[in-house]
Image (cartoon, rainbow, N blue to C red):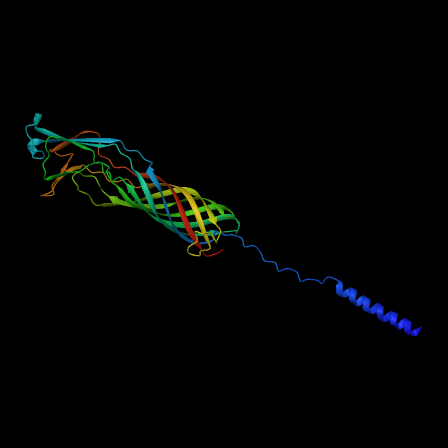
Length: 294
């Protein structure tokens, strides 16, 4: 009997051990890896292209009448001994623009929140190559003279801005407004016969806004392994200082003598001489490479 009880106890112990071995093992809890939250904070650089068009108005006509007896015109046989040159300035400015930008953004709360920043850009612009060249001559002008449009119109070859930006981000989408300092320069292309005046540097202001979207880091556009590639569409209004007007309508190539509308040589009979602000709007698309915080 004693042996039977001992055998039964041993069998029970072995059965319990086998059952315990069959129980599922307790696995270690998984390691939690937080999903990174996108932030607009960081430096960026990129390029853009678009179209710029006139946002101002200019509709002036100047007619200068000069005496043939004064030597300005070679044909003194005109009625009354007079000749005339008439300037028609009914023109606008528009054309392609493109360039690059660099800036820095700071986002107060990653994910969604307020974003502030600063951006500088430099742009080529194709404005006014043929502005102010519409002229009509009555009589035969002296070939020693270069006739200049006294309205002070000028082309614009490039412009740039330094602007602040403020906006609100919804994760990878940023809506923003922008404004600040603007500058530009172009040749004072106011004459006929190939003469070009000195470059005219002007300053003013710019304001606008846009929308920007950040692509994933592994985007096929991320050639520089930046923390993000962003695409933007932006509208900008630019106003540069008034270009200078002059009452000079002709210059002697041999002596440098200037003939003005308020001298005995000529009188202004139609319109007036005046300058104008360079005002234009820009619609452009851009691509930025963001470096810094992820």
